[in-house]
Structure formats: structure tokens, C-alpha cells
Image (cartoon, rainbow, N blue to C red; front, side, top):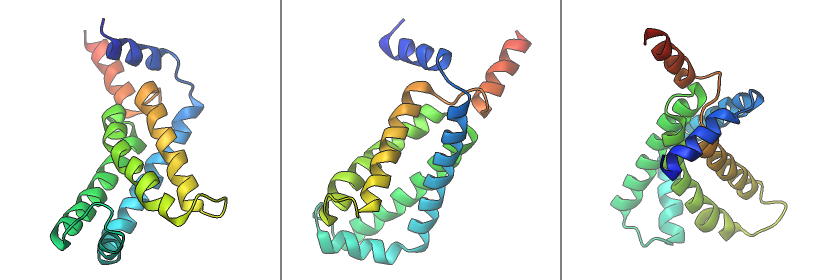
Length: 151
């Protein structure tokens, strides 16, 4: 058994049912952030070009904003319904790391910077669900139960 399989097994065994409510809320939050990104791409492109942390050209900024929006929409939906939750969490983590360190920290590290705190909390929850998985109230769990019945 590899280390990853051991972590997955531990997460499956030690998953509290109340964590599913938090997982669903997290998925809805990420999905709604994806909607906000997709509906406001021009302002976000200008923000990326204005800060110019990554040295993006106009086309690269547009591509980055569209990729981030798509990943948030799909990943948030997958996390909310509990389908491939670990994978959906892992693909969100690099985006949240960039949000915390490059976007939100540029506005200052204070108690008034609520977007920074929200990003940190979401990042920590993504790491948590990467470890513990989707839980008993999820599509993954019902598919696993159905597969066990068919055996």
C-alpha cells in the first residue's frame, strides 16, 4: 500500500458526517466565485495586467482568467456533489495559493482584508478535503456502495 493509498484509506475511515455540509458549502462558494470570474473577465484581466506580478501579456491574462473561471465552475460543482472530490480539491489548490500570496497579500495583511481571510480558509478546507475525501453524503460514496452490491 502506497502512502497516497494510506492517506485515502485514513480519510475514508475518519470522515465525520458534518464535514459533508462544509464540503457542500465550499463547493457552492467556489462555484459562485467561478460565476463571478466568468461574468467579470475584463476587470480581472485588467487587474492581472495592472499588478503584472506574473508578467502576463493581454492574451495570457485573458487565458488565465478563463482557465481559472472554468476550473472554479467545474471544480466547485464536483466538490459540492462529492464526485472525485480529491481531484477537484487538488486542481483548486494552486489557484488559491496564487490568490493568497500574489493577489490578496498585495492589499495588505490586516483584519480588514476579508478576501485574504476567505482565501486562506478556502485553501485550508481544500487541503482538508484532499485528505479526507468526499464523505458519506456524496456521489462517490453512493457509487462505491453500488459497486460493492454488484460484486
